[in-house]
Image (cartoon, rainbow, N blue to C red):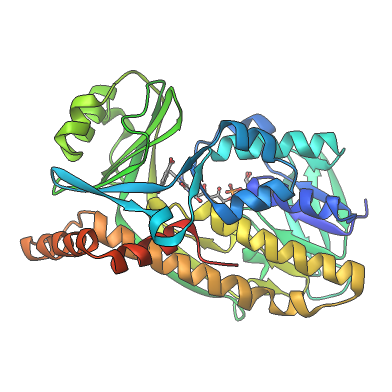
Length: 389
Ligand code: RFL
Ligand code: PHB
């Protein structure tokens, strides 16, 4: 098979890129290791920056997001038993959209189907080859036979555990990493959200977050040891812990119910540089990971895809390779901005294993300053709603 752009990974990055390129008249093939049902069963991000919203509209998946998503103009930050609101709209004139990654991915699959886009599922042993030539190709196995896709470019949208990044020579790839000594235990429950906005809570027992998907679907997280057996966290244990960590008036309002999903995710910051090598470009989690505290992972992936799509369109339409040459540098500038913000917000809000009373007071003082200072809130809000492209 021959195509112009072979995309490895059919998560949000890969699907969005193939949709944008196809709309610009560029052929793509997406190779995804899992089934579509598996990809759609992953519960992940919930918050879209406005730049992401606009790009998803450009890709043609605006209508359901605009009808069912929830614009949020601020968020609550809580400290022990009290809280305050950071107003994004007042400080930056911008807002975010609460619309689940699962919905984004499902909308993208429908849009790909409507354009007869090629997404090959259960592609095993996907291997990019000849990436430093002008004729790269990708091999994979499907139904017991080896197949090959010849192309002009390979785009690695295959997440943190994917094969693309590992195809770069070791002497080219530079990795930066911080692993946090805790994880997030998240549940989804068919209950009304405790508040109409998100609550991020710093508590001496550990961090907690109240989020949502819709009027009767809530998403909550508590900081937990990353190696905790998930069976230890019965629904009752989860709700009890969450109630202890959020302000009392929120805990009193909290409606609990059975969880319909429960998972424990590790927290890390990770960046791979460069994000382009020869005819390989990396997008999204394939190149970087942020802890979820800043809600940046999916938004960074969408930003990479925008830069990659613009660069590939300029190449194929106008023979202009400046976007490809600048891709890594432009994408990494945005990535490091989000890496810094997510690291700061994670460090401010979580309880670290060796944390002393001194450290706790420093966190409390920083939150108090954030409460008192519009300037500090503006910096936080600018980062939360998304740095410009
Ligand atoms: P994905 O979603 O990991 O998709 C990669 C796809 O590639 C496939 N794949 C392969 N295919 C072929 N061959 C191979 N060898 C392959 N290896 C892998 C995989 O099956 C998969 O389908 O990466 P992508 O597309 O770059 O998207 C990134 C986002 O999924 C991720 O950044 C966000 O979910 C992060 N994230 C959040 N981001 C936000 O912007 N806002 C949030 O509120 C937010 N909350 C979160 C999050 C991530 C979380 N977890 C569990 C990691 C909350 C959580 C709990
Ligand atoms: C979510 O709703 O899953 C969510 C929201 C905000 C975050 C992380 C996750 O910072």
